[in-house]
Image 1 (cartoon, rainbow, N blue to C red):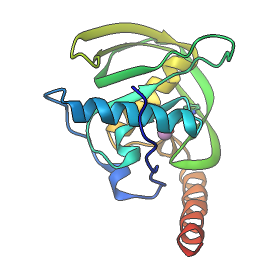
Image 2 (cartoon, rainbow, N blue to C red; image 1 turned 180 degrees about the vertical axis):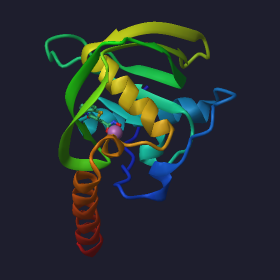
Image 3 (tube, protein in one colour; image 1 turned 120 degrees about the vertical axis):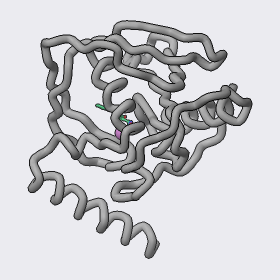
Length: 175
Ligand code: GNR
Ligand code: NI
């Protein structure tokens, strides 16, 4: 159950722009990857993580948006997640991304979504999400389609953040 921490890719990286491949057989390797992603997410800390953020181009996301530390954790593992329907009403959240550290921007998305996926045993699941869970699951599914929250911003702001990240990566490479 307990996974190992993996390094998180920082934008810009070509792997964060790829459309990820559907998972066909749920192997032990894929379940281990899910455990590693949860470990990496909790360690960061973050509320979600998509496989491409650790360099694996498979359709797998993990999330836990339970913010109340007095409640038990609610880890979720979703293979091949799909938005089945979206509410007409929208919600704006200040989003961040573990692949774009310390940069935040408001993004507007459907306030509620119905999502279908395969759980870690390969059983199909379907559930409605709202609030932070709805925002997070949409943010994670975007990652599987090579999309970052930056893609919703005005070009000027996107370029400013991308330049900051290029600088951060140069500095990290020197250190
Ligand atoms: O940890 C995260 N926080 C967050 C806050 C608002 C909207 C989306 C997110 S997801 C992010 C982790 C991450 O980068 N997942 O891909
Ligand atoms: Ni992200």
